[in-house]
Image (cartoon, rainbow, N blue to C red; front, side, top):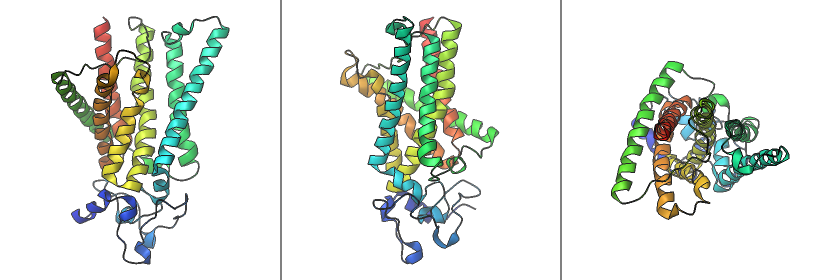
Length: 316
């Protein structure tokens, strides 16, 4: 059974402001808690999601130690934790790129050729995906802050995940298209170049971009940004702020590849940020409603596949 509609209100309150009238219902102090400080859920209630619609159970809103929005996860939803782990992931990815660059120099390969070589591009995308997933595993899963099952990775129905993902993916494309049209009407030039100058006319070049953009990126980014950042910030700050903050971070991280550009300018950056942030909002909503991480993964993959397909068509 799904919960009474009145219980939905708790999801929109900041994590530290949930009401509690007794010792068993005491609110969780997310600002001062330590990981695992609330390992015992209130009254032994089942923190799992609703049987019919995947809505969080009463214990999840009351500050249970486990579940989709858990108190242990809320500790990692502070800005310090989120930004710190995000910067750590970016730093490790850049270090991996530098290592590949130094190796290429030893092989007498020009640095300008690295980002146009399909093998190098595929290796960089693979290392980036491994880093995102590894950070979540080391800081979240290994420390039992959350699990792959709670994240919605281990338990899923392939048919329903794909169907829901297709629906949200098409909605993602539609909303992004509307945002793009509105930006064009406002005179904002859309600049979203690929970070890699791969030859899209070669079969291997196309295959590397497709595998990296449609498989590696959606899986790793959804695990990190939705499975970790969105859930942790929603558990700590409430559902609405969790969606807004995680989507803003997701849009901002995609601007890094455009920052060295001398031609994009602030409107160009905004044209990249806004559609991605809006799409990220849809992915977070899809994840919240389904409790299945494969749903936003499929939706993310559909959006990337469409974007890469347009790139291939323009290149031909």
